[in-house]
Length: 267
Image (tube, rainbow, N blue to C red; front, side, top):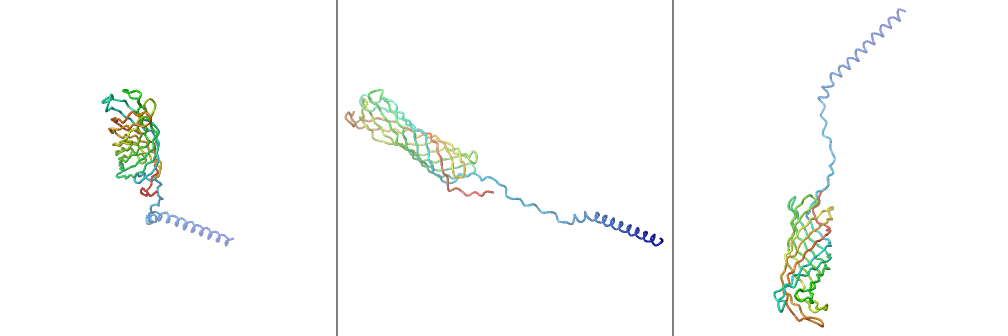
């Protein structure tokens, strides 16, 4: 019995010692943790992947494309000889559909400024008639068959994909001018084409890196010419001169395929 009591006392003493050791260890760790944390190196920055941003639109490059639209030629006639000398013989207005193609190149010289050059050639189906108020049986007829322009462009980038521009250069209009007398062809004029300063403006919108849409109006300014109407057919009037003031307006809608611009990295 006495032996059992001694064993029990020894067991309690051992348990108390173990408890004290555990409590001491926990307290030591608690006190050491801030110091250990201070000695540990700070975590480095977390690497991030590239941010996906759309490529900036750029207008440098060349293009080729097609267009459709409307054209109008205006001719004012003044008689030179005979009973019509010095008198107005009215105006012919020839309207019609036009279609063709264009090509050119642009350079974006600043974030907002684009300069370029363009050539354009269109087929035309524009015609009109005008009966002379001096000799009403004589009818002047104009048939516009083609026109072409070479012009420089100067544009302002409003937003990266939208360009507003003006243009100026030189234009040519090809046409056939005739006179009918009492409904019968009697005279055909020389000078089947005329040229003048071409000026206008429009806007162009880039749908993506390669394709753009554009709309423009421009005017080929008045050319004063003396045309000679030679007599033809069974009832010619005889050759006579006529002063003709001619100009041409056009409104075009087109599409361009663009190529050759700078390569822009995408991130």
